[in-house]
Length: 169
Image (cartoon, rainbow, N blue to C red; front, side, top):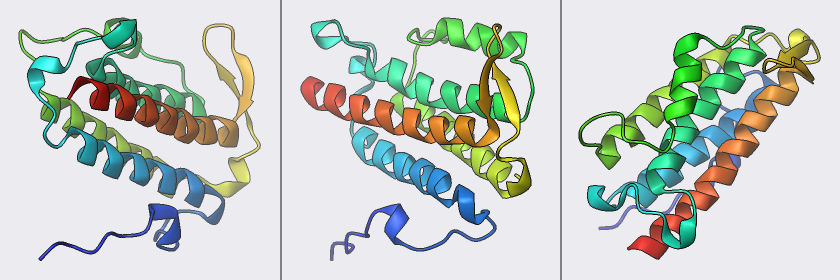
């Protein structure tokens, strides 16, 4: 018997231990996780780096989803990016191993969502309007601005992933 379809994550109620003002960020990240898992369930490894009509590949989107969460949540903590994070940014869109598997990239994204949720659990709502610099130029943002942008940017790439993966299979 098929499982009943759940409502979207934001309609399932508050998430335990997530501060109230950060619930929408957590809901979006969990929704992204579910959608990525569904989209990639049977996606063939051999199509991972294909770029139909020159658009970004499925592999790029999976790597970027992980990377953008890591980078934006780092800035939200008031930290600069490490050399490793900068190197990872430079390799998005390329297979870092002799072979790349879809499910490995999905699992890496899942772990990054877990790390992000843990940070949300420990984010003091009193810090949400605190200023944070972004990038080498230290462009102005806030803790809340970075966390919301991380959620929004993640969902944007899930949408692009959805279209690209459907064009390829």
